[in-house]
Image (cartoon, rainbow, N blue to C red):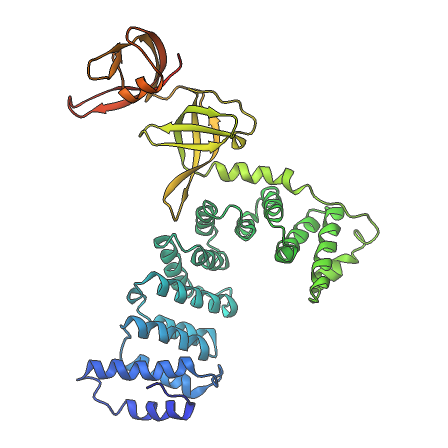
Amino acid sequence: MIAKDWEKALEIKNEMFKLPFQTDNLLKKQTYWLVIKTISLSQELSKDSYHTQEILSEIMKYARITDTQLTSAFIWASSKVAPTWKLYLDFMLWVNFDKLKEPQQIEKNAILIAKNLLSIINKEESTTSYFTNWIYTSSEQNPEMPYLKYYAIKLLIKDKNIEKAHKLILELLQVKQKEFWVWHLLSSCYQEKPDLQFSVFCKAISLNNKPEMLRGVRQDFMRLLIKNEMWANAKYEIEEIIDIRKSHGWQIPEDVRENLYNQNIINIKSEKVDYRKFAKDVEQEFLQTLPKAAIAITKIDLQNGYAYYITENQVGGKFPLSITKGTALKVGDSCYGYMTKHVQKNFDIIKSVVLSKDSHSWLKSFEGVLSIKSSGIGFVDCIYLSERIILKNKLTNNVKIKGLAIRSYDAKKSKEGWSGIIVFE
């Protein structure tokens, strides 16, 4: 039974080390669990609680915690009572993170640790790299947890590991492109590239229609605009921040108030940045980081606004014509599609399409007389046409046709060949 008051926890603490820990592992585990759970549930604890720190320290001295649930409880208890970030890290160094196997436990505890580190860490301290690396690795192993990735990125940025942070952000963008906060994170990676950072802020602001969510982005954007002496644009952001905060009864940040009365700003007219216009620069930069796949256009549906395609592996799909940016596609075109993966459903989504300057080696045009066999299949020279293709296009024997074929493999003959996928006429 879990103790309901602190005095009971102290009684348990005073008795626990009289027990035969070295000879009864089950008893040891149960005792640890009881004490740590009491600590984690207590509503009376504060971070200056000496007795609580003493209990956790004594547990650390006697045995390395290996039970999964106990590990989780220990992390939670430590986060409540550690008075300094150093003692908190000491507690965490005792945790066997390998025991956290279930994705939900990994996510819950990694985020808890990250939140504590972000709030109390000394920027010059490198000890946090151990935890940052664990959270980073956990986020890599659990791509279905975007918010775990978020905290991994925040820690990496604080740890000045911009390269790894940038990599994770680009991965996160593949599934969260419409979330302004991911682009806001990306802005931290472009401190040395102000033009690109400007574009990233524009992209972030252009994505969200809830003004109160954008106050942090706008404040960072304001600082960049002032640094670049874009006074009129900076004044617009200042006015937006003030309006948002006043409408919610929130305090106006000191640097916002000060900059409102900046001599370069106070007497000029504010001017809004064309966010969508400048966001295009970083959108193009992002698209170039996506996996690229060679595709062939198999159908254009102008009425519904879709183009259908096939890949070298004969995987088909469709994408909206709107992503072609005005490029007129036609059936048979060789293209490259920049892909992202739908995490939950595990299929590719094409985000951008460009025409290929060269023909794909797995694709070729054909023209000739169709010969239909008794089985229903057909051939144009060495090009195989399935019965489905023949029936779909209402083809007859000895008709002259042309179309598009894809490289295929004939399992019966154990050799490569060509299969028609489109018939033009």
